[in-house]
Length: 245
Ligand SMILES: Nc1ncnc2c1ncn2[C@@H]1O[C@H](COP(=O)(O)OP(=O)(O)OP(=O)(O)O)[C@@H](O)[C@H]1O
Ligand SMILES: [Mg+2]
Image (tube, rainbow, N blue to C red):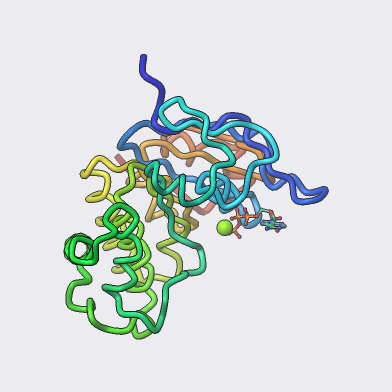
């Protein structure tokens, strides 16, 4: 059997005395959508920082197609097909939308002409074409989040890490974001989606991984997760009800 696209194996990250992640293990298959949820401070963004190479894990391993990659720097992880967005958007506000996306496209296409074509095609895919020549700082919150997704897509990833791209959006915008993640998956790109907006992630996730205080407390299909007493106690609360069949 071929190895999964991503295998996270007993990943531990300590900051001084604090274990932000402890023995975190889960797999992501090619083209799968995984929801990564849990209370504030549970360690979700820390998982992304390790996966994207922003810092080396304290211990544990990360495998892409079975190959160990823990500790590789961000540019290597990006070249291997791991792209991310940031919980607090990190766009270049004085640059145009197109230029922001070209930063991603240049990872694989250093020639400006090709990078421009790829960036325009990514903007078309995410519906931002008419904003291409506007300074990124003029975009709405929803558009800025979408721009980050576009820039990540322009890196031509196999695995996309989305950190709260639905936070702060209106209900309509959340539905548009859901639709976009579905279309990204249809392109064969696997997504790990960190989200507090349950109506955004529950309907599209193939599996949910739940973190609490650095530990995985549940891993399973959304419906089972929504009914798991430990998850309800730690995070979802009694008010969240899974949508009907
Ligand atoms: N660079 C860092 N240095 C020190 N401590 C950190 C660092 N990054 C995260 N932490 C700590 O690790 C823990 C997990 O943080 P993390 O940002 O991963 O949580 P999170 O699940 O993403 O939370 P949220 O839902 O609020 O975004 C927190 O206690 C946080 O303060
Ligand atoms: Mg976070």
